[in-house]
Length: 143
Image (cartoon, rainbow, N blue to C red; front, side):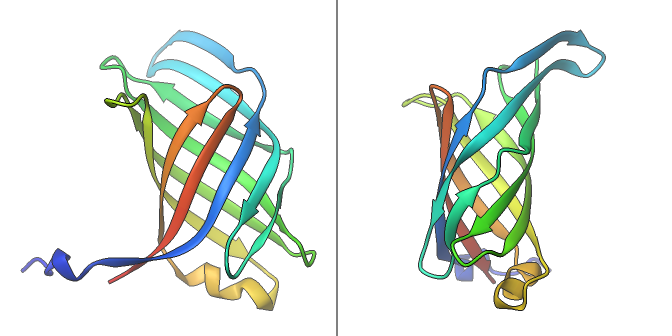
């Protein structure tokens, strides 16, 4: 029996403002057009974690025939107090009335005990792409 999703709620974690390099486009692949978008930096800020985004990540997205894109992103968050957190997420970018909208499902890997709480949560993020940037609001899902 399905759970009552009316009881599903979220807790705000942080806002991401990521900077992006120009994409590398590999057209007409067997699964569609592959677009690799390097993440060159940025910031994240929230009540329990804030810091910068390392310049080692990327989005390995696949453009679908219907105009949507399937995202596959891996980035490193470096907190203001020196911890490194691996953040990975998949999701979908789809056309919307106000431009493309992104909905993703982030997961985290943190070795620092101050951020170990991130290891055990499922997050959701809502984003908007811009010119050489993408912005997300990230939330913890509470069942």
